Image 1 (cartoon, rainbow, N blue to C red):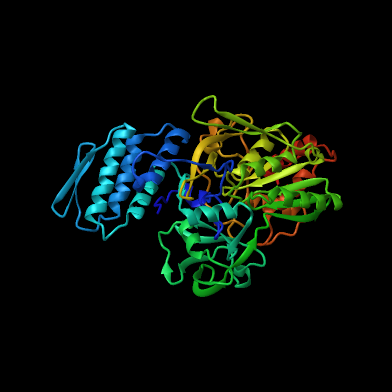
Image 2 (cartoon, rainbow, N blue to C red):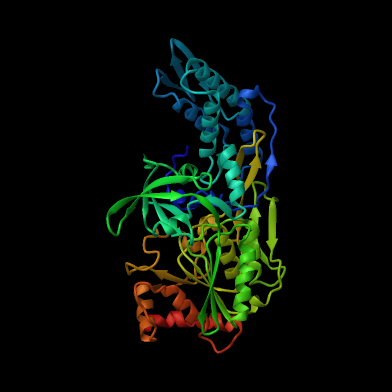
Length: 524
């Protein structure tokens, strides 16, 4: 399947197991869910799907395609399916000569799409004919498609019929599986979170556990979407997983029974002192409805200030991110805009509510796992001056993926444009920089195993953040008489204090006082 191991894919392809949120990983789908059907008619039936994919990339990809690069990747992937067989490969200028069973086929590639398509068709026919018993035409075509998609970017992906149906099902916020969120950390499939009342929770699976085998098969080198496909199954069927727990250095075989799991993406808690806490773990179709329920609970509790936690949130649906941000902005305020390949291909998304929450102090928590839709929400609120952003620089996943349905019911997720915050910040290049940035220097605290932030160009940021060390924050909270232990979420406690530090109830006063408080912590 896919063999990329960069830090981008380690976080971008974060998944809820068996849910394949498109990415997003990972993973999650970051753009509008616009399903289209492409039609082929270029060659015979053998390469119809490949041609559909090629035409969609040529017409819709966010950058002008490099056809020599695309076809090189596709042909190399086809050849790789039989490279361990009796196949001789000799490089020639801009191409190769393939030899098997005493027969040869040579090809060269250029920057012309049609010429390269003829070369690929020749390779396809040569391999199909000479290795008929080793690889099927269907697998050979899929290898070519996967190679092409791998050459684009980390988020564009081809999905067969089963994978595509699962991804569409998962955007509804419900899936069949075992109930855990995982990510790749140092090439190890690590549990980030376990869903409540799920098979994984009942079996005692914990965050930071590492999955090493599925049904006896070692998963080293496997990508997250491949693992999800292996774990996905009908309700009431079982799957065996080997889990290594770093804290005890023990590996245990666990049998989980799959079931339908409803995804609760929003959690609410009353913190006291007229302050509410809302955590959004991802952006599915149900997120805004769940957020509205949480805000109603906050109103009943008399909440006058709110902490919105988007840490470890890898993203989701664009439409949901716009609705979520709208609760804290005036109606008609720009939330985000996208730019496609054409300079005039710009689409703007404005807030859709005129809600009382836009007047109340708000703190938004982000970290290096906050991506895509999380960055849209935090970026729009930061640009509008409607929230105090705390934590770590976000991940930087600012590309839009559009979903295309193919003629054979498979699907294509293709990057078609890029996100920008209202002030024009390129999310992919810069991420979202918190106004109060927390640097880790204490072990054993929540999210301690998260990867460090990527290096960015500080010149692209307008306002330099106030930087606090965890140890400074801990010392400050203890002096204030707060109860601090290894289970204390320092950022949540500080955020609550920060947005309640002003006697004024207006958001502007509260945020100004919060920044002043953060700057003064250095003197404690």
